[in-house]
Image (cartoon, helix red, strand yellow):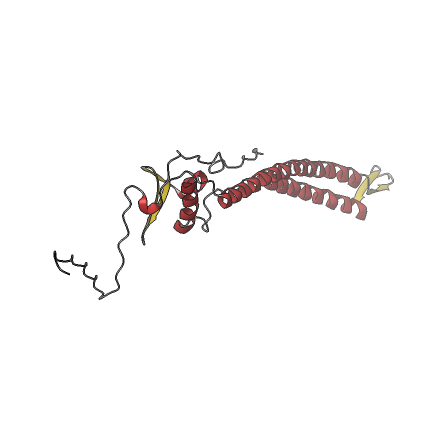
Length: 222
């Protein structure tokens, strides 16, 4: 029986600490990006660097859940081994035990000797002997069943949960809310004042024209 695999570690290690630079979230209708200085971040890194409490609470709950599955897996494996040993004992002990009882439960008939033939003894199984033989065969099947069931139940790997950012948190609005609070703590400028920030062009409805830019006033005009 193979040992139980340990819980996964990907995503459950020490959280990303960040570099101390502000984190900005920019999104459009088709894509969104998260940057820390000049480096791009994933939503997980951004939420970990900003110290988002909801993200960390869910991550810790999932980590504890995997640890509990690991302990349950060890317990199942121990019970599986005990069941396999019990099944082996039932199969072997039951077979030989009932076989001995079956032999001792036969009925022997003795025919006296005559001038033409010697004394003859005939043994025939009684109902009890047939019952013991049937129980011996049944014990073999029961023991094999216990061995197979114990081996199967004790060797199954736990259904661990691999960590990924929950859908409720993996959204531009939520990540922006968390990173904006983080940026305020470190005294970074808002996203509209961030270096390289460009305003997303306004989407016009079909057939709608962009209004003309205001014309500068003529010099000297009152």
